[in-house]
Amino acid sequence: MERELLLLGLLRQTDMHGYQLHEFIHRNMASCVDLKKATAYYLLDKMTESGWLIPTEEQEGGRPPRRVYQLTEAGESAYQAMLRENLSTHYEARFTGDIGLAFLDSLPAEEAVNLLSHRRTALQAELDAAQTVPPHVGTSQLVIEHLVRHLRTELDWLDEVIRRIEPRSEQENT
Amino acid sequence: MERELLLLGLLRQTDMHGYQLHEFIHRNMASCVDLKKATAYYLLDKMTESGWLIPTEEQEGGRPPRRVYQLTEAGESAYQAMLRENLSTHYEARFTGDIGLAFLDSLPAEEAVNLLSHRRTALQAELDAAQTVPPHVGTSQLVIEHLVRHLRTELDWLDEVIRRIEPRSEQENT
DNA sequence: TTCCGAATAGTCAATATTGACTAATCAATT
DNA sequence: AATTGATTAGTCAATATTGACTATTCGGAA
Image (cartoon, rainbow over all chains, first blue to last red; front, side, top):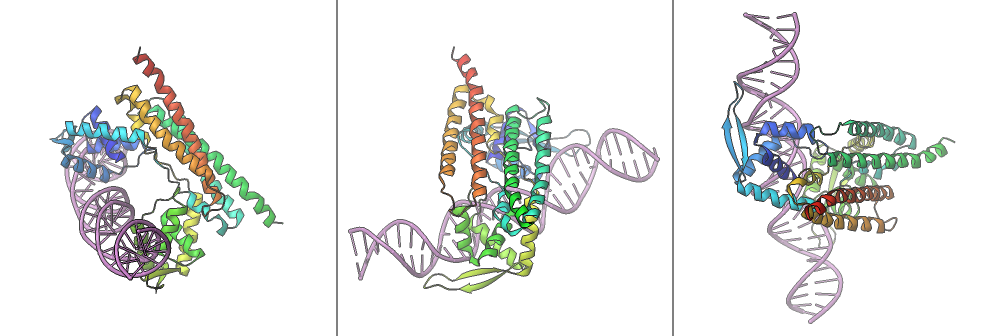
């Protein structure tokens, strides 16, 4: 549902076509939504059938024709409702990476540490990238700050996990 | 893929049937995976076709018959590969709740604060619940700690967001 | 003992999501 | 002028995911 909110929210600001919407989201909001192109088109079709959007065929130069979407009044209402719903609810996070941790025992401590160090490198890289984003390049400042805080917490935690494994690794090597 | 890892990891410890697996995950690992019953059965079928599992029909009392799954050697290899993959990669989090924040402007500040306060209550509740889980009730300690750290960060951040909105709200009321 | 609600075990049709593809155009290079 | 590779715009068949349903049984209350 949040993806629909996003599409509506963007269309509310300017009329756009599917390709444009996907491109924008992919470039500027990748940190909070992962919306594949095909899914975007699917949702746009669905919302058009719901009467929330009106498409207008358009052609620019020799480019393929495209459907530019415009919010209807019903679309605006849907947007208002979803926005309130979204702001007022707390979404539980899912930590995909925790599943492996639940099975840490099945690996030798040393290897576990190596694997997690690899994870740590990627995490650090994402943190660096997030901290480097110059203010006002599309993405909301709030959202970037949220990401940074989250990544810092993750890094701290991962370091602690690694620290906790290591002593075992020394025991085994003695 | 992480869901397959989870199922394999559990089956590696004890043979189980679908209902049992789903129940266990639902009760003890809800914080890191959301795996619906129908999906669990679907994955079990798929992994059986991949030759990772061998099902055995079983009957207990007058209960419906059930398929108890057992890991094959191929299943064990798949588990090993997925575990390493999972531990070494950093999964980017998706913050569904950030989408609303990107559109905060479209609401009066006062209402925004109210909505976010509602969110805050739910968040606080989840934090309390997580902190209350007694050690050693199924879920890995690491996973619970991870959740707690994450929720604390979220709470801090949400408070800051609310704080930032409020001044505007006062301006408007003067 | 009979009635009720919860638990057990799973299926299935409907939805949602994705990867892989098409087909044209532009811009730059050779 | 021809080639190439990126960009534009979107489709489609294959997969994955879910909500809603079935049908039985168990335990306890009335």
